[in-house]
Amino acid sequence: MSAEFHSRSFSSVREKVGFYIEDIETPVGRSISLTITWLILISSAIFVVQTYPISDELRSALEILDSAILIGFAIEYVVRFWSAKNRAKFFFSIFSFVDLIAILPVFLGFLNLSYIRIFRWFRILRLVRFINFKISIVKIRNEDSIILARIIITLLTIIFVFSGLIYQVEHPVNPKIFRTFLDALYFSIVTMTTVGFGDVTPLSEMGRFLTILMILTGIALIPWQVGDLIKHLVKTSNQVETTCPGCGWASHDRDARFCKHCGTALD
Image (cartoon, rainbow, N blue to C red; front, side):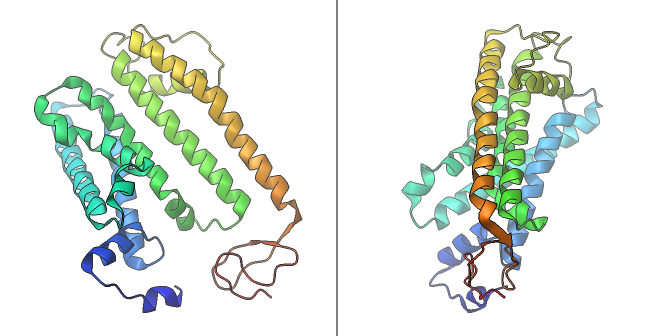
């Protein structure tokens, strides 16, 4: 851990909370990020399990656990808003928008609107906020590997969201085709890759609209992400593997004397 974190002082509790809730380097910050990440994964797993035939007792227990996690997300959002240096900027940021969609059922649940449940699938998008944290957990230091990891995480997240949405809108009207989350996942992958076997088709207008979005996303996102990776591969073709003794970053220019991330002198 760098001396910056040991010597860092905070002028207020708000500033301290704001630092740790965004930090992924200190033990406290990593613990907070790890806890939130696991809650997101558990919440997503609950959604998937609930698409399968399970006992009423297990379903009720999962609903209670999911509600508790959702309340925790709502509290986290309020804390992030309270500790933000610029609350207006935070409120209109993309991450804040994703967080708000994820906790929307908390604020609208009292209306008892069934379609509100569709927003639960957006919770997995919150993992995008923690991509750097997940990468640091598995000790990925090479820049090209980080870009590849981000592409994979982004694609898997988007596929999960589309699968959840198409299941939510198609299962009530087309239960024989979209029986479980796996059926929706199969349809999403086939659609986004533009393979289009045609053995699974949506019936509702919303399902067809989501299918159009999937196709457009597959056409636009996948080549763009792969192109970004190729661009960075070309950019780093003149770089060498020189591991920084300070932060562990491995990609540096051939004539680099100091680490571009932490400034430590290179051997």
